Length: 464
Image 1: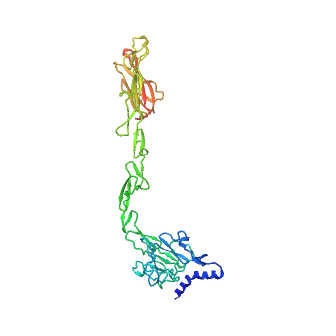
Image 2: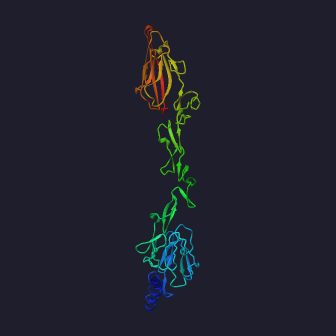
Image 3: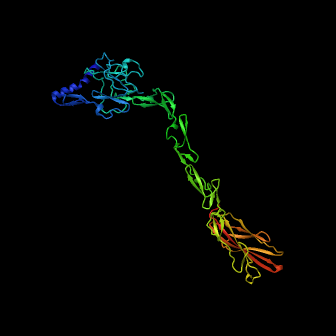
């Protein structure tokens, strides 16, 4: 009886306001109402229209006298003409399938009623609202003082409910201010998710979710084939149970994100990757040789090209092509000067019978050789030997000219020969001309003669 009187006093508030306005002309309404000049009475404010996004998430806004409710979108309302006919459907709020809870009050004469979850009672499947009676237009409740409600809070009061039952719909619990707060089923452990699924709390409800690498299929978690999705891996993808693995092709490495393949710069691994120059390419590298060299089948080594043998030179007919490391030299053909007589392509002699040949070398020869740059030392590079041997003769060998930097020396190898030795590394390209002299002395014949070899040494620019 007290609840019914409170209900009448609450729902009659607009009429009390109107009476005040009629007699005192104050035109003031209680909170939740506004003055209507045409009807000349206090009119309820529809907060669901006046407040942008009054309810958040999966909640829907339901207007009522002096306030509003945020209820799950799956809640269904039945409008009846009389309380004794609650089953007649007049106005149904559209709903959609959802995993959220449905607010099912069990007593149509109470404002809110909380039934146990999963109840199949027909009397608790809807909320009945009678639009014909001014005292029964809306469920009884006490509106909150705040007209802006945050998500997860409902302005329900403890009054108007069945004794011993929660004043809040399923998924909510009352707080100290008699407002319904969202109940975190995941934290309380009251959720029901299959093994392997995790609980995610929502406003007024909860959902079950699959772990990473799985997807929900008809309530079950099934492996997700990430490799079938575009952009999972930049190159090779291998699907695994609940995950995937990205792999890279040869010449690439997996980035820290575990998905992207980055090119490996093989040229930075070692200075000996290529004999000359290394050029990095996507997923690989290429060795390049300098002009005058060709790349060998191993793809790394360089070999000198003999331009003279392949006629790949620019020497004239009056010149002689001489191949060197990395190129060739066009040498002028030998022309012996007086009193010398040419006896071969590279040889000139001055006969002792000629008076002009006295004190001159009997034989002069022009010879050529090429060396790689930075050749290791000491190194034997050229042998000088007497071609004619006389009994009792002595032979002496030495460097007559061109050894200003002391890079060479002559080492005797017997009675009639000597070896030219490189004793200091030479960095090319350079051209060196050495005069190597052999002195022949035969006391029994009273003979003293000399022979000179003019040796041209071409040092290449590269050590290969």
